[in-house]
Length: 468
Image (tube, rainbow, N blue to C red; front, side, top):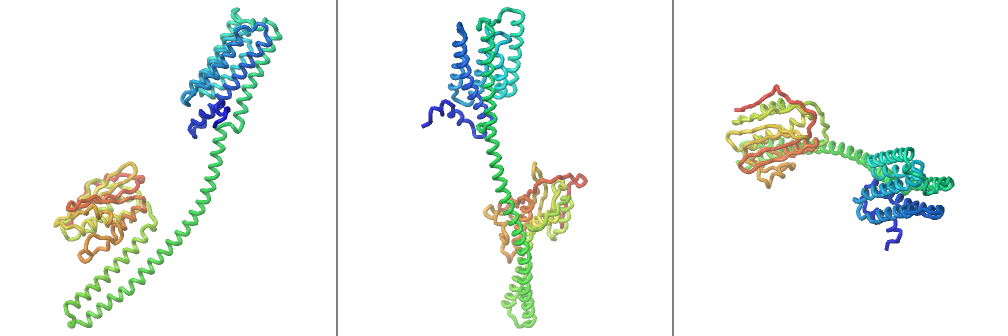
């Protein structure tokens, strides 16, 4: 169960501030200091008047009333959203009291004028710059007002002290001590470990130091991991090259022996035996191609990108001319392809794979392929669309996996590695590739690469290349 001090110091309200709202917490702490210490000062000032002034009149009661108002204002706040109004009420109550007592306590020479500086200081801290400026102007106007009426009218007097110099000096002394007490209370808080902002900064500093240590450890681990990865990559490259070479040697031997057998047994082999030998030679060629594809696939992600300005229009035109197949093939570039900052070899390889696939696996008498580019805020997007047999959605992820093909390998001379290599190239550059297709409606391959500083190539307009 919370103690009495828990509610007396309004910890219940302090706990409602968001953890990150250090400024709000700090203002509330200052509000609490001013309220409790200010109420104590009011009670002390009222008791002093009653004890030292024979006929203090109603003024001690007004001062006690201010203390009550301040305490009620403090304890009646239920939500943090009400605090700004509570700050203003507290400061205005203090101003009202000081203004009221000045008439019978010396006008411009009242000891209460010392509190003006305290209230202005708190106004800046509790209400911000505009609130502080507002109270500064208010008190400046109030001082000028009391100077005028004290000099040119009889509205003010030392009636409260019966015009006795000793009582006037004593009042000034008490007010000066109370003012110093209020300033000291505020200063002590601001310089103490209780200052919420200081605590927050110190906590943030400690957390930052811990994170720095963790980051240094992680950085050391990352560097060690990078070295291990580089060593592994070198070993993998070496292994892939050796494995490819060592595996190809017996394959070549098998192919050569098959040729020798065919020559030696010429005229003695039946059709079925010839078919078997042909199958062996076909499988040897396919295995050789698979080894080449595997080696190329393993090296793609470790190939260093050489960034340069690449005119995609010229690059694609050369690819289109290279992949003429002798079939009726119409390839159209829809729009002006841009000049981008990219790796030319990587872009060439990706387009070669997509165009070659669009031609090789097309089942139409007349092949139609369209190529175009798009852009958004972050990426360049390229599309290659064909009028081929299309791809079922069930297999649209499968085609990007190494050695996966949708066609019978005996019907199509394909390793099933092309799209997997294209995907790996693009991922190495931070790009992505996907396909949009329905069976019988062709396929539209889309790949995006992060946009680099680019420039248009206006000298190259609409291009259409027809291969017959």
